[in-house]
Image (tube, rainbow, N blue to C red; front, side):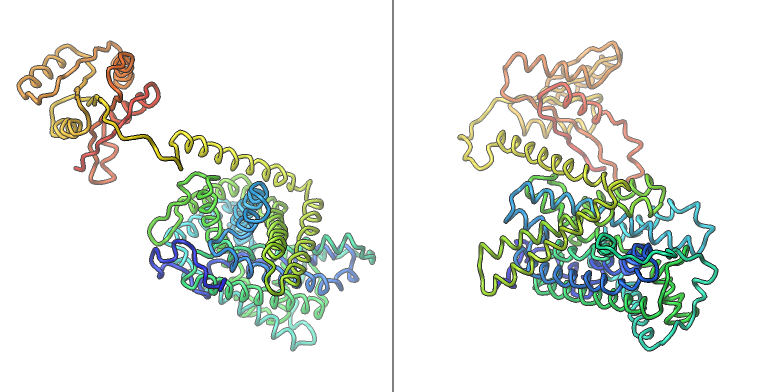
Length: 601
């Protein structure tokens, strides 16, 4: 019965612009899939400190990560069913752990999504510049170019982006599976050309492998699990039945990722691979399994493309999360608006702008961003698992004890990983995440309080008093007698009890000419002249409005500003911008209601 739940807007929008299972894998799993390129390498680099003996623990550590992956997939499959409106750990914590904890989960996800974009783009460009060193000095511009491409595709809709990214995703997955399958039939590496001439980073004499080293390797390898939560966050983006499609996507993602990670770990031990400077572990495995030919370069090229496009996971998940936060009054309501093609345009643009700032600030250097990566998502993982334990204890459905035990075990694993990652990378930049998390929560709370004050003033949720007629005066600024003046006065007569046309006088001859034409026209509206010797426009009108307000003769003062709306964008610079000047002065210095009447040319 739970699987039939649908979000409130299930019938709204065009289903063509929503995701299928294959589309969900392409649009929301790129982050997780691309982590295969650096997850196993992170494990190997940590274990290399213990020499060849340490590398023997690559498979056990990877199996532990695969077990955690299975726990997370099972957990998020239940999260999808219990919270079909999306939101993942934020929705779970909001329902079972309180608002403050929910906001902490949301803040951690926001940070992770932004960092994922920056890390994915810089890692993709780093792979490209490794192949073409001449592009190294232009890496920042390359990063911004890739970001602009991904943003543009996502502004066309998440389903559209899925179609664009389906082929690169399929090529990458098939390439990794080919490495694993072919490598299992080889007794020795078919080629070591990729690593030839590169210095090994393997420690020479170290043999001891302690618990701390294994924990560090486990925590480093857990970077491969970032992106697992994206499907649960973006459930409303799927086609009907949303819950079933999202669950199938989550399971497919977990299965593919688990097989690839475990398979690559087996090959690392089988080929006795050693990490070397300047060549990735994945490149060595491709060389060993497929040889240094077409297959090797297909793997490298698909890795570059997928790393560059892995940012798409964030563009699928973060805008939906921001939509939920906006609905709960923790973010500006503009983030809850959807454009055509079911696009959360403001969320997409926000993510693009903040990510661009990170790319520029880091100089396109992936190593300065990686230490910050994965901490935020593991905070979200842990909060989500704890929340699901409370979910089972409160509902107590059939088999709830085993489900609660599963989530409790997952919370223990992700909690340990969070502490280890934060502790080992604190001085490398993780302190920034520790500071940013509470600051984001404070920001969410401040926005919520602001909306509460606005709601109190608007008397939201209460029946207002009786509707009464109020005496009102409408002022219309004019500079000449035109069709625009006529339309403005006509609109003003329909809005207020009395209407006054006002003009700021700078030159006597000009004022006399306007007065003479006004008397000949006889519009039935008095013209008030406001003298000003400083050739100002907005402030004299604002002072006149305040003088009228001080008389308390009217319940409401309205200023109606007639303006021309150009037919073409290139005509906008031709406008005189008088309306903008008057509007700014009135809003800054008066309490009058300001209306801008735009006449389309």
